Image (cartoon, rainbow, N blue to C red; front, side, top):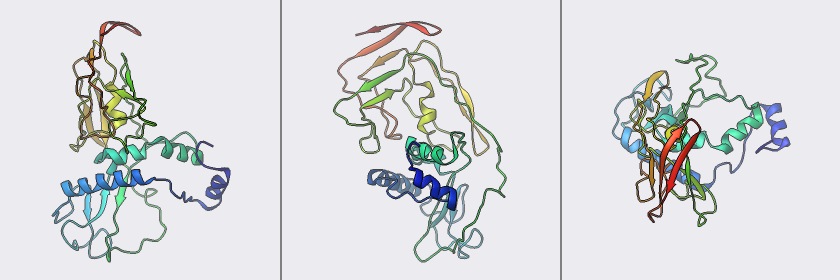
Amino acid sequence: MKVLTQQQYDFYKENGYLIIENFIDQAQIDSLKSALERLVAEKAKGLAQDKGDFNLEKTSGGSDGDPIAAGILRKIQSIVDYSPEFAEFAESDKMLDSVEDLIGPEIYYHSSKLMFKPAKHGGIKPWHQDYAYWASTKPDYVEHYNYQTGLLISYWDTSQADNNTNEHPGSGRNLYIDAHPKPFNNVNGVPFRSRIQVYDAPFGLYPTDGMLLHVDGKASPVWPQLPSPLFNDKGKYYYDELPNQGVKLPAVGVKIGVLSQNGTSMTVAVS
């Protein structure tokens, strides 16, 4: 068991559910709440009717009927595709290790949604099972990320005790530096989650390979980029759009360049 106790596992097997108290710490809660507030302000403020994955609360308390008011959400479908913070949480080691403790290592992402419960509104929801009846647009579809090869550089910062960038964005004990740090977006116009952003992190002499991914069945290509053979710690490797992804560097003038590259061998220069 990586995270859970044997007693928790036995309870899950007996009852079919498990409540883990204090699973999310206050820093994570604050980060997710801030991300949600920004997303709602950008996508749903003043929204008068359902628009794509953003669904308003209805007078019926369900999915049908007239909205109770503009901008009051009932649900955001595919939340991880709109919020890097929620994607990071869903893919965190603690989350995945906990799921693995319960059902084993064969874990596949199916879908995500965030439900709202506006005060004095909403209907009663009994225990139910949705996805046994809802057809996926990509049943049994598994994405493969085309991680690149090259020189992978990390910044070791002894002033930090851990890599929790939710508490200290851009700073951590040992963070990898992305050779192509500018965030790129998915088909919905929001940045891909970090696991995809870093596929092209290594420095090297060759252009990156693109790849075709999907967001709820919609094609979402990742385009090739020019090679990035030179690291310079005075460069920009942190963007506010993805505070959990980039690295803030001390800008002391360290440079590392790839001079030659052949398969798994390369020559580098450090100054």
